[in-house]
Image (cartoon, rainbow, N blue to C red; front, side, top):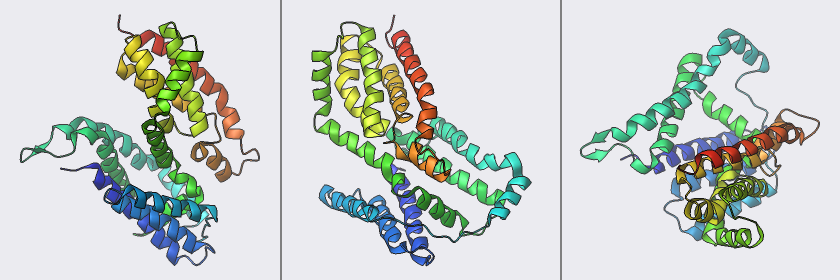
Length: 317
C-alpha cells in the first residue's frame, strides 16, 4: 500500500538534491549554510516519522538558527535569459501543458486510485488518496516537461535549487505554520477562543455564529500567516461547537467555506510571506506591501461572499 510517507521520500530527494547542488556551487558565498538548511530539511522528510518529537524539534531549531544567520544565493544557471526567451517563443502556450497535467492527474487520481485493489489490499491509503494523487501528478508533470523540453538531465534539480534559494526560508512556512496550528489546537487554544467568543460576542443566531467563525478564521490567519494554522483552532473553538453542534450546520459546508474564509486573511497579511512578501521581492516592487494593498478589496469581498454562502447553504432546510 502506498502511504503518505512515499511522498515524504520524494520531498526528501528533492530537498536533499537542492542541498547537494548548493554544496557544489562556489559562486554562493553562503553555500554551506544553504547546504545545512536544506540538508536538515531533507533529513526531516526522510526520518521525521521515525525520530522522537524532541529530536525533530532540535532539527527544526537548527534550521531556524541557520536561516537566522542568513542564507545566500548562487549565480550559476543552466540556461541564460536569452535561452529562456527563445524557448518561450518556440513553445508559447504549450509551456503550460506540464503545469496543467498536475491538476488534471490529481483529479483523476483522486477518483480512480481509491478503487484499485491489489492482492486484497488497496493500492493507496484510503485516508490519503488526494495527497498521494497530488504527489503522483507532480511527478507526471515533471516527466511531461522533460519529454517536451528535453533539458539537461540535471536541469530539474538545479532549477529547483534556483527557485528555492530565491524564496529562501519562507518556502518552509506553510508546513511549519500548519504544524503550529496543530500544536495550538492540542494545547487547548480552541477552547479558550470558544469561551471568549461565547462570553463577549452576541452569538444568539446562526448568522452571528457564522459571521464570527468566518471573520475569526480570516483574522487568526492574518496573525498566524496561514489558514492551515488557523483552521484547527477556529474550527475547534467556534466552527464545530457553535455553528455545527448548536445550530445544526452541515460540517462539510462549514469547514470547506471556513477554510476559504481563512484564505481571505492570507491575502491581507505580511505574515503570509511566501504569498505576499516574497513575490514582491522577486518582482523587485518598490512597495513591499504593494501585493497586499492590491489584494485587500478582493479579500474583503470574498469574505463577505463566504459569510453569505455559509448562511445560505450550511443549514439543512
